[in-house]
Length: 192
Image (cartoon, rainbow, N blue to C red; front, side):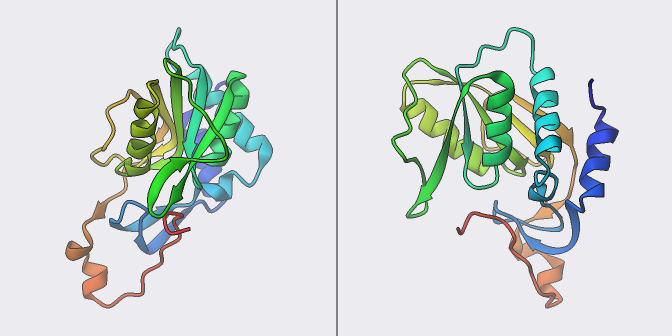
């Protein structure tokens, strides 16, 4: 059964995945809204349902050989999408600040890779995985995310988000909340 955008948004709201305050995003930008998809992904059943919906919404005939996600945020959803596609799953991790495939993960030359993330703001982590895929001699078939925050993206691959949720973000130098001395929360995973 297909999910509507309103049903996906309701799931995010019911799990308190959308928070308001003063946040430093993984992209480095600041926002008054943070989308913590880990809250909705706490439920394996909901995660599987969202993954099946993401796969259902992919263009007919899109050829995918494997799924790759950036750690940490994209891992759960990436695994679920790979399961729905019946494809192999790998993930990248930061090593000394740079995204790398570790754990003997291998992307074969010529493979068509679907990159899966939880939330895309600028897509910086996706762009890093995109570069790793290209370095392996493989091709990015597309990018899937649960949320597209509708900011300028740093990656070039076709993008298939489940839900567009435009939320304002700005450069830290332009952050009025910083200027007002408001405490900032940095719940993202970039510094893990």
